[in-house]
Image 1 (cartoon, rainbow, N blue to C red):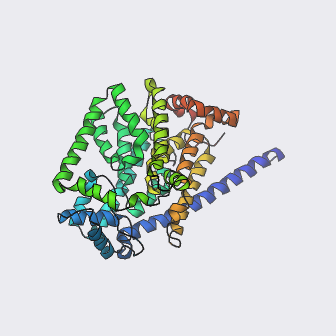
Image 2 (image 1 turned 135 degrees about the vertical axis):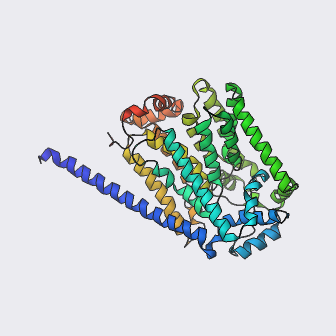
Image 3 (image 1 turned 120 degrees about the vertical axis):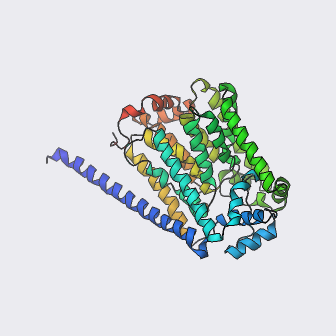
Length: 428
């Protein structure tokens, strides 16, 4: 080996060591999380202590034709199921039409319901990532595993939350909106489970439907929403009035939720609820401009990624597990970039969230309070990944990109990304 070859060999050794260290950390955290998932799904002492219990308790109320938002009844059922004393009554905050998902749980025992619910969420995650892998041409390598192991999605699984249902609806829409618009419209009903996470995205979607005359998609959406309203009314005719009363009297609007919009209210005027909606309004104005300047070449698969990430960051309120909706955008960025270090950075950021989740055992709420950075981090990472082709020109190119809003990269992704080599080729 010549002297000139020594730096190359040393650099390769460092790269291998770094990759091994990252794989070890990410693998261990994922392993512990997977173990926690099975424990949370099966262990009698844990099943009733996670968020899933509120859906089961709501189902119990519905199965007995009782008020699904009754504070005292819910608290009694949740306490009996194992909800810790430090928590107050937990309500199903999703809109009443989504009660039809909780209704079948009322006919199942706690542990069986936990298994069924957890497996349904797991299938949503696996199915979503698989569909995204198909949409990106069944790319070689292992970058799609970033979706399967994405920490917010794992937090959603552990807690038994519904964000993965919304993720599946989003992915099916992206997959079918060109070829089967009516079915794509039906799938959007799953997104209505978390409407506050889709404010700019949904606004642009409505404008796009009118401009592109995508009335089949609109028909599918209207049918799905109408059917859910009818089924919810059949299950509980008083659901909307009961829901409205719960929202007015439960005090949940004053609850601290670890996200940027709530922090904005806390910092400036804690009693001014309207401040939480300022980021969503600003983001909606930007989203309309972003769409309108690209309406002739609009593509939900590419343009929708940035739109969804901004919607998550600007949401009036959101939890860590809601960030599972970032998976389509992050996988797009991971497939696009040729820089392996960027992919490694995403894996490390995800692992940090998992570490915070493990620390939650010793310090309650750590997973939320220690991950306030995560939603902006996914957005920043995506911008870097999509603009990685311009890095050779220095950081000023990235600043210029903010004004272009990655219009050049959108075209590159649509027409030339597959010509850049395999996703796992070494960084140049």
